[in-house]
Length: 77
Image 1 (spheres, rainbow, N blue to C red):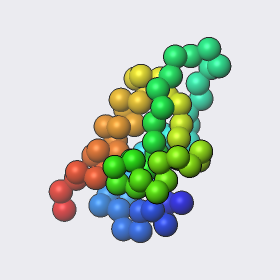
Image 2: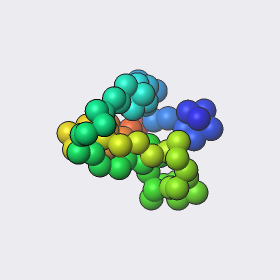
Image 3: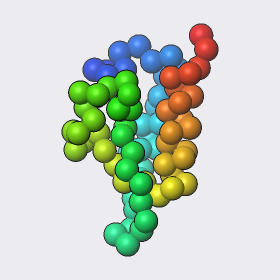
Image 4: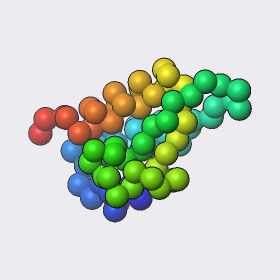
């Protein structure tokens, strides 16, 4: 998925950190969660409803994921 969606990331380091963070998510069944799109709906609407693109995160983890993702897309060359 990484090579298809992010063929030339702005920062390989931060993209790797984001993917590692998403892969490490482990929420208990009774946790209050928010839905997070691994690939943002605004940039990749074709993947918005794909099950593999949606993860459930705690509010804190969702904030961290969005922050890391924004950094990847907003980083200056």
